[in-house]
Image (tube, rainbow, N blue to C red):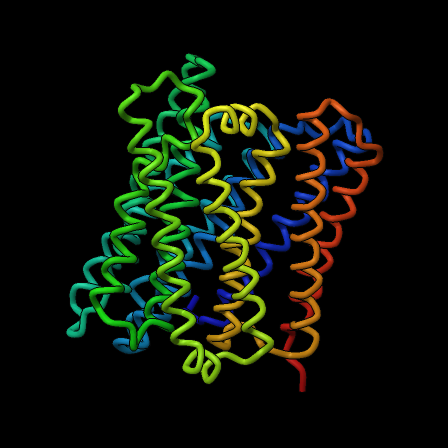
Length: 403
């Protein structure tokens, strides 16, 4: 199979469709009976495939496209086997988790997926170093690769506990959140920021670019504790966590200030139909960072992590609102996704689904916190999931070749 940006982008969109389809089944099973499907098995398959089949696959393609633009198309040849291997592990995890949950085959494919990510990181790091012209975008990308590798500690710990049945609630959650944190806030976020920096920050002074990077980079590791404030942690570490949360907000405010100054340039390279997608992603990131800052208040943190709808809403805000919308917008900007009226309508439906889903999860969280019933909330969330699926189906259909 020869390397093709368009072909692999189509696969990424198809994988996103599968993620959305499984999301509908998950929501349907909560609202109605579906006894022949194991909810936990389905949830594990959904999340692992979303990470490997959609986000990681999509980011690899975008990062390779950046590298090819700096060198030549021949660079794709050495990565073709890595992309195929990542897809094999993604589909392997999807099927094995659906059948057995955590078991021999699902752990095998999960482990293989991690080693594929190591291979990509090593080869890509070397190719970045070969580029004659270095820029701050490379710092972001290298940090993303490191955080991706770091997240595997959580995955290996989780697999070990599952395989040996040595489960302890606190250690189990700590491993899960460790993996999630360094995927969401490390690999996903830093890779997206690297792509954005390379595209939009060409005229921003290097010192300011470095300042933004270090504000986020220094905060990333201690920010993990924001996901584990329910653990007994030393008092001094709490102060570091608060500083990390403020550091990220400061970095983002400085980023927004620079983007405002780059507005005339950005409007020349971004069509209006693409601008609003990236704007929604930026709004979602702003909300996410301020929610993180708010979670440094211990009473709010215990409240948030004590109610599942709040956690689910927060994770979906990042994966769908921040990361997925950014990737779709960037793929449109790179012409990997054909920008047609049908594709624009499809992404609008998808974005509407995200907004409605987040709003309903917020209401469900408030209802759970206040112990007040919310009638038909599960049916409404199912409707939001169907809306998300509809948008992705239409987006896939919009990419068909037409004469």
